[in-house]
Amino acid sequence: MIPMRVGLAQLECFVGDIERNCVKIKHFCRLAADGGCEVIVFPEITDTGYVPEVIAAKASSWDGLPFQTARRCASELKLIVICGLSERVDDRIFNSQAIISMEGSLLGRYRKTHLFTPDPICEERIFSPGADLTLLGIQNLTWGFSICYDLRFPELYRLLALRGAEVLVNSTAWPLSREKHWDILTRARAIENQAFFLGVNRVGSDNEFRFCGRSRIIDPFGEVVAEASADREELLVGEIEVEKIRRFRKKLPVFSGRRADIYGNLGKT
Image 1: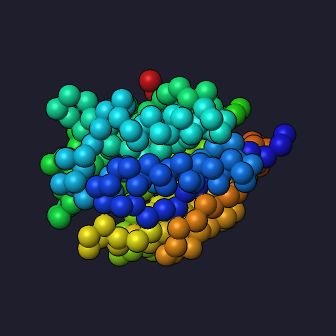
Image 2: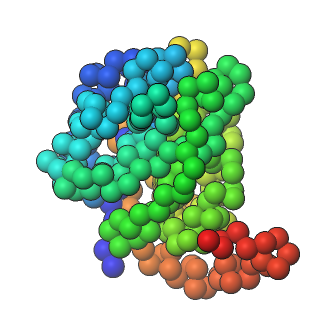
């Protein structure tokens, strides 16, 4: 089976400048299409930047410019676009990922379930938490979705894997102060779930909040297939090998060795 080519858009946002950030979405989608990618993934809150007060003021509905820009890019360039966006629904705001088909339709969305509550961010002041997992079939693989702080909750990823996820995606705005955790946790989520892990991060800073870049594609063995720089914008391109996932799961069948009699049947629906 031919490997799937994916692009991770490691970018720097303009805080509160929706129009300029949408120009970046279009630019990176064009780079991905020119590079032969089938899928492009964007970081967390690509539309507004990661400043709570700005998000509260600038978040838009799916009728707004950010989502419509991503839709047009997907349909015109024949890309699957996975984009971290603010999502305003009446008086609530969600930290969301929109997953858009090559035809420009909304395949699905994921709303961040674990909000980052420590000071000074206190996401709960701005966002409502999501309440559902999202798994979608994309190009003959099952994909599971997550955002930033979700990475610290292995239960989420194990449940996605037990429900069939072979590719795990995390759109993030991960800080420089916890760069070592990014390295360890992304590898761990790939290894323990025998899945490819796609982690796309920001660079630059939003006010005093600095990001560590290093967007990465990790295979089921925990090996880094491709990794971006720590401090510059770039489109990271790599390949997902379907057979690598399935061969490894057959050779080392960890899911069948789980002791649900001891720690409960996490995968039960």
